[in-house]
Length: 238
Image (cartoon, rainbow, N blue to C red):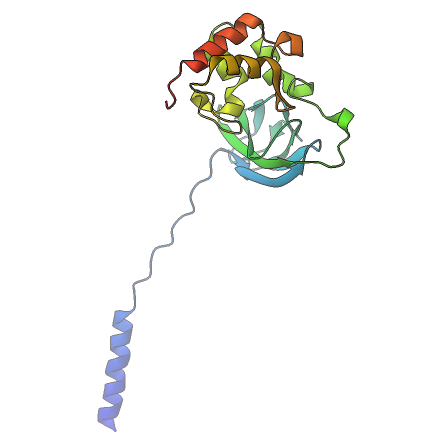
């Protein structure tokens, strides 16, 4: 009996000695002084013509009150307005973001950039897909030269001469950096005559209207020739 009890005691002591030592409690990772939640907001599918709307939280993790001094969006069709520009220490405010879905397609990404009175910066992104809206009346269909979209696709192109800048300002947001393609196809090393025709007349869609002056666009014949010539001379692969 004594031998049996001794064996049990040995097994107990051995099992205790093999237990892992308690790990120290790790401190939570400190949050940034100015924090937007969520950092990426996925809205899913939005019908064209309906506003893409999301609400973010802006948190002040400072020990003093802050003021939001600058709120910028990556595109003129995106509006961002906080409930309050003043945020108390460890407090928060809501930021409402609304995007005009005119002439947009799938894979849309819009960024918001915020700066506070202490110089802290924060960034958030809103993503969504614009899908066909069967209830959108033909007369209500707009293009990228209408409304707020004109602030990105029309006005900045007026009078621009350098083809690189023309492309960066008016084309890159759809055709990708270095003309390699994005929402729209690559424009590198294409036939110059074809490029002139497409840029001037468009393709019959709100997303790609005619950019020529005669078709309601902002570009002169010389601007279109300069841009098409530059694109046609780009190598097929960057």
